[in-house]
Image (tube, rainbow, N blue to C red; front, side, top):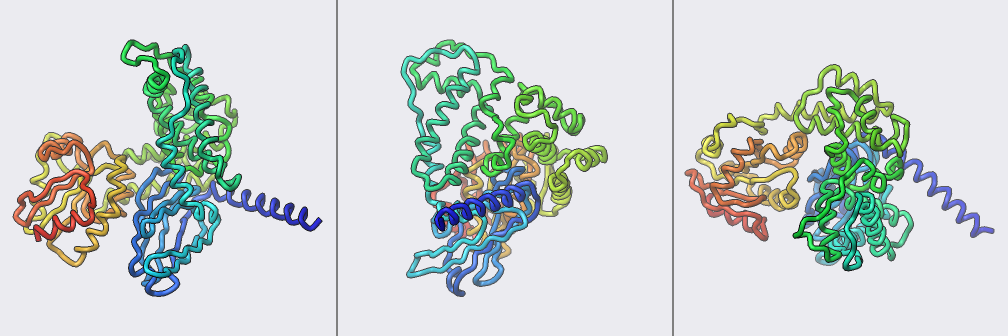
Amino acid sequence: MLKIGLVFMGSLLSLIFNCYGQSNYMSSGYVSLIIKGASLHDLKNLEVDGPFMSDPLQGDRPVTFRSVNDSTLLLSEFTFGPASVFFRINGRYLSTILLPNETNFINLHVTGSANLDLDYHGSYKEIFDNSDLQEKLIMKMFSYMPTVKKGGAKFTSEKELTEVKMLHLNQMKDSLLKNVPSQFLRNYYSKLIETFQITPLLKDYRTSLLTYYKMTGIDDKKEVNIPVRTRSYYENLITSSYLDSLSLLPSGYFDLLLTIQKDTLLQLPDILKAGPAVFIKSLKKTFKYLSQDDHNLFYDMMAASAYINAINQGQQLSDQNLYDIVAYFKNKQLSSYILHRFDISVFSQKNGEVFFLPFEKENDDVLNNILEKYKGKAVLIDLWATWCGPCLAASPAMEKVKKRFENRNDIKFIYLTDETSDRNRFYELTKVLKGEHYYLHKNQFEAIKKKYNFEGIPSYVVFDKNGNMSQASTAPDNLEEVAKAWIEKVL
């Protein structure tokens, strides 16, 4: 009897927690994570790489831990809904989910020379305690190959393709999740896998089809019949599970919304011109099978992402747009968040260390104009983009380089990107990446890459105090030590 009572109480507490957690999924506010050392010495030799964060209305981006004192680090960011965060401490991968208006703690104690004892206090302790499992799962997910039969037939409709792809997705879930220790983690990891796999299916239908043909042995070098894609393509991909707030948890959720929004098949109107009601009406032409309610979660998040994307592209919101946002969304936390992001965009454009399209487009040779400003100083130029994963992954190493030379006034760190970078995300990242930032026209950025034979990014150019180029390199190994050596050479 006692055992039954304990099981019932555990189920009740779990239900209460889930209801409470999901209510916070639809709130805005600051998420906070505090790392607290057991002694003043615990943080002294701690190597914290990252962190990176995403939430339902922002993609992956680097954020930062602030040093409060010798034993305390603080991460605090304003988000809408749950924020997925991952980072490394002394090389160890750690991940969790933070909820608005909650504070989470990691009590840290260093034993021996490098052993870490981490005690997590927060809503998603189970995710944190299984961080190593999540890291392995992600690595396996990107290398997973489904079992297919050779000599398969060509598809006659896009429905056949989606059915096969969803079958493969379910096979992947069964394979990767069979040893996951709890139902909650299985549900969370399942949604994570689904979100990351569905997005590329929507982005490039043709590539998905040809990849499958290649796996089954069909010669894709010959002319291949590509079934016409119709709106029904979405029915197996975006299901009623996206009406549940649990769908907001995976870090790829915002990218999925943008992919749907940009799909030319749907012909969604410009929300700034048409207004949210017309936008949703157009959305229903494809997703009416989900719900007829204009204010379900999926429709609200699609409309919110359309406004956020417009802000990210540097578009100004008119008084009518501001009124529409306030009047349309029943969830006032959501409308307040959109307005908050607009305010940040306006403020960021006035930042004196951020130069947005500062040169006439016809001027291809802008590098000399930039270097002229820093005469008598050594300069390290970082060519990057907001969409470039390796660029963002390199940022923690470069922050350590800047810290090494923070007391010198004869070295400047300059970031260059171009119009391929999301504008609002660019402004957000300039608050984290210390240095001076230039957002250039694409032709100007390409001219600099061509001058130094850069085929990709991240790329780096170092100039001495006389303006002479000393080093030019793309994605060097061991960036932290290499960049320090570059700078020591020119100082």
